Amino acid sequence: MKSFISKFIFLFAALLISSCKQNNARSSATQSPEKNEIQYAKGLELYKRKGYSILKITHPWPGSTTSFTYILQEKNGVIPDSLKQYNRISVPIESVVVTSTTHIPALELLGVENTLVGFPNTDFISSQKTRKRIDAGKIKEVGTNETLNTEILIDMAPDAIVSFGLNNSNPTLDNLEKSGLKVLLNGDWNEQSPLGKAEWIKFFGALYGLDAKAKTIFSTIEKEYQTTLALAKKANQKPSVLSGAMYQDQWFVPQGESWMALFLKEAQSNYLWADTKGTGSLSLPFETILEKAQKAEFWIAPGDFSSLQEMNNSNPHYAKFKAFQNKKVYSYAIHKGAKGGILFFEWSSARPDWVLKDLIAIFHPELVPQYTPHFFEKLN
Image (cartoon, rainbow, N blue to C red):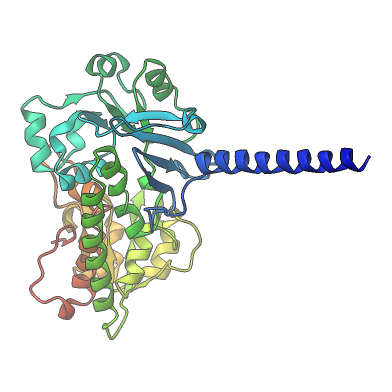
């Protein structure tokens, strides 16, 4: 009896140890390593392993409960069975279709803009470097974001299509995947912190096998941003600021937790709607705006207007604001590409240090004497 019990205990212990080893092996294969290469971006995770990387998009659209995992497989890289359920992309890629102008700067900063072969509505692209390739016929029109041209994309067969989703219904992207194309969702537009948006260059760095270069570029931007942030803290006062403009019968201002509101805060200004909750836009009647912001010292980003006269023609009530009367209205809409695309929409998320310094030059010009702005210009 004792012998039976001893054997039972031995077998049970052996099974337990074996089970633990299997669980540990399974865990090590399926769990991501501790080091996430991403520091600021909330919707992106990147884990490097020998022969492959794990790229996770954890916040593809607002309120999303769905995440996407992509395995970026290097040449001769061995993927464990536990990860074979996920979409695999062979890297480095050599051709790409992107669908947002915010993707263009990453390609140019990494020096891989020549791999771009398609884009929906190329008129939106402002960059002179990429526009030359468009004019030379090297970048094809692929429809619109809502209805990408499946036939053209299948015929082009790019190594990757980088798109974005507004919700969990993306039938066009689903059809492209069913056709055998590699589609990745990019959620850079959901990031609310300036450095969080900029860090998405590491997404493209991973696709091109240029992780080290992407890290160096981002580190430079991070350092410039932090240096500019420290400079702003030397300001002696915080001027009051209004933002936004009328659309139809409502005025839209950035909510207090939004990307733009954070810039205004870090540029040491008193944004009048800084205490509101939310990361989008707040819709308010004109009378509410006038009551609160009529005496605001500065007016930042009044829509796509490029002159005070254009603003006045659109709505004579704009002239009631002190900032308008004192010609302290600053717009990002002056700097445009050859086809009318606005440079700010394309490059601001990639270079938050430029945006912050522009705003400091507006609110506290004594801190950055003889600075030439990249985006914001005074309207005349």
